Length: 328
Image 1 (cartoon, rainbow, N blue to C red):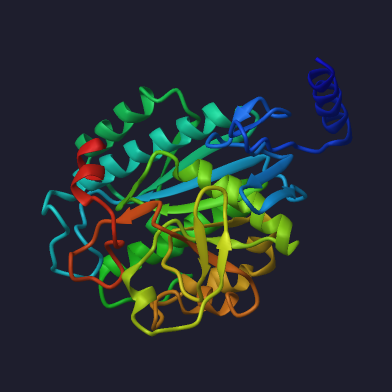
Image 2 (cartoon, rainbow, N blue to C red; image 1 turned 180 degrees about the vertical axis):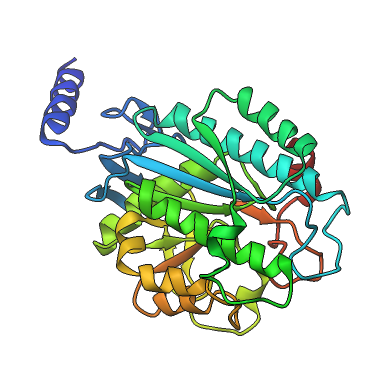
């Protein structure tokens, strides 16, 4: 009885002092009232990963602005190749949106105090395809709006391109960056409509962002996909511990990534220059940022880029492609 009393007093004292107790004898944390295989972290407060202990959260996430670019008619920009499963483009756009909605809802259930807003930048989708997108949105109960891309606005800004597809891609990308600069408050997630996301994607991105930025004491860039090209040059990398998986530092991304409003403002010239012409590589000015800032991608992937099966910028390794396709 004395032992139980002392133990209860010790638990209460630990809570008051802000410490957590791990009881390895019964695989639990009495201060958190959780088993050790549960999520021990508390968003905006602390990140706990066994056996590494606790990270106090200094970079707290309050809101996420998601900007999704859609074009439901062009199969693959400037290519004649087919995507995995060889379905019409609208199928990929709808499944991408559906997986994003599921992931946001999953994150909202875990983090009800974080504000989510999604803006879709649509590039001339046919009305029947837009109606399908609107049906998904109306059934989601999320804050999602659609903006229709105005090509004329960018004809004097973007250099003349060899194809209308390239111009459209650059224009929609610039519009999405402008929306991030205008409406972003905290985190901004730029996404393309050929990515399928696992349900915990958004939760892992947010919680890992808090943990890692609190450790390095600076904002970062995050890519949700583990691309094949990252394994082709045998480049050195650093491995970091996120919320529920490892992350690696990278020096290249495509145009689907998350970052902070402050980094968007800081490197606005790089973002803007990315869209003025087709560069080689396309993301040249974005990649320049990563010589000064942390950019990381997950191991294993949280999102699947559904390109041609032979593309080095596409399918992530060790993912059940058919399963995630059918689930969405």
